[in-house]
Image 1: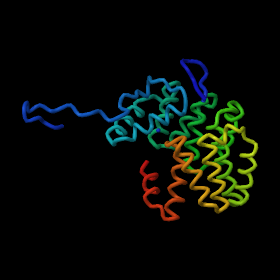
Image 2 (image 1 turned 135 degrees about the vertical axis):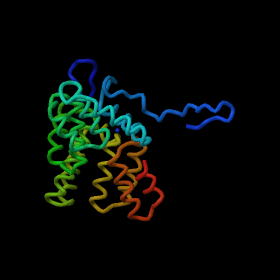
Image 3 (image 1 turned 180 degrees about the vertical axis):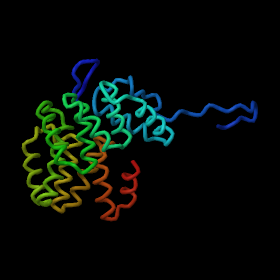
Length: 239
């Protein structure tokens, strides 16, 4: 999902001995992102900037100052909601972005905030609507399947959730299986079937496609730690 301009939007002191003057310090990566004015063409763009925002505490603190300076209505309110998600304030992001149901980037971001709050049943219809709108895009389709799996697992157990996920994967376009989302969900299905080696292989493959896929990294770390691959688990947890 993407957006441009005002069109409808579609769908992370040291002093020198010689002079006694402080040397300029390297700026933390990502400090040049201006939330109030920067183009935000897609959720993927937010993910990229979010990783930079969390690079250092000073960067995060400066970015949170930007977020709180924005108003709560109109375009500023939309950007504020996106910024709240980027800084991990998921409950506030859900509330702020509810005012922008026709904005695909805002909707997708809100659904991801709901997922972070373990409110998968609320996120699922948002992801499904975006999947219908962008059937060739793997990210909303994968998110819809992921939400369905987690919601069904809570209600009916992982066996039923695995059955539903297997059916959904079978109905997805062939290209989906080669995406990070497809590989991650194939791993999630294998994990539900207690095939942990296949799950780990799929999660590794998904990481090769998208190293920033946070839910995949968490599942890979979880399975790796459980089966004695502590170094891999730590690497994923720290990413």
